[in-house]
Image (cartoon, rainbow, N blue to C red):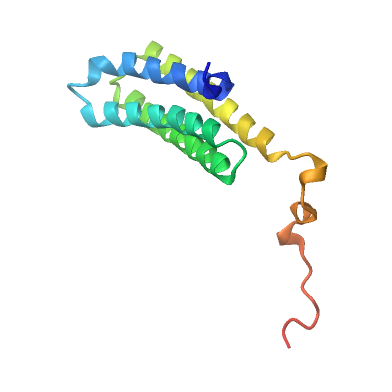
Length: 141
């Protein structure tokens, strides 16, 4: 088993890719661009998670997972657009949107879990809130 196959976020994204390809097949002739965009963004989300798994705990990991989250968000917009246009049947839309919601949940959880470092690896600067800093009184001088 490849390392990305162990990620719950990837498993759900992979299921979303497969369901997307099945659901968009009937509309390829009428809504080609939107169908291809939905296929692309779901595939990219799963691909970014596979890449993240390969690079491990590096900063590239977080970047890849954040990009996967962006692709999932874009998939939500395209899905809503297809639903409003009436080109995707309601049952297919519900299945895809449910998978998209689950994928978003697991990717967000992965981001949260990855950001929570053990205390011995955290920098004291991690706890500072830049917005609450008081400026020195002589900062205007």
